[in-house]
View 1 (cartoon, rainbow, N blue to C red):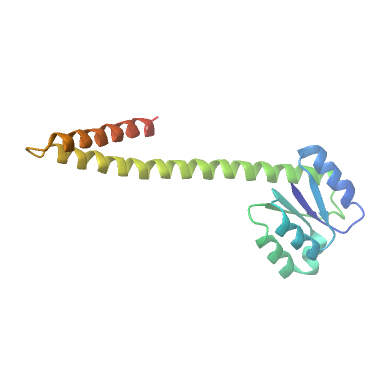
View 2 (spheres, rainbow, N blue to C red):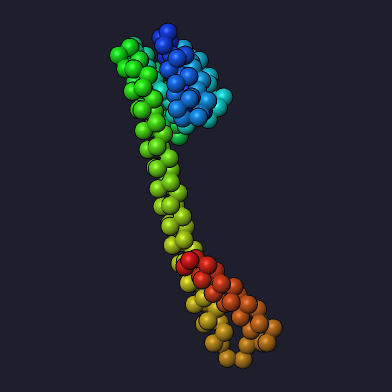
Length: 160
């Protein structure tokens, strides 16, 4: 869902054009108070802010964008920008957001994989050292071997 913060007469038409183009529902908030309520009530992929609001109260606009969470902010001037330009700006911002999320997830997965590889290596080394201990009781040796084999399986899965 997208939040459009604008009080101009063209806000409804702009919201409809954005919705048709992106396939996402667009909610219009005519002021900062209603926008703040909307941000507390739902998660948005983008927050579009009319430049006129920003110019009137930049501090309130900044606070609102801080409350936007993961929504990508797009500041537009509805007084001079045509609907097509606003739609292009929003689509570009949504694409950037999607790309950034994909890259962040990929980086997180890589970091997790590296951390798990390190832990698995520690398990493998410790279990190998324990298995090398002379005169291990057979039951303990079987359990250590099971731990070693499970760690080997984890390592092979992590390397895929």
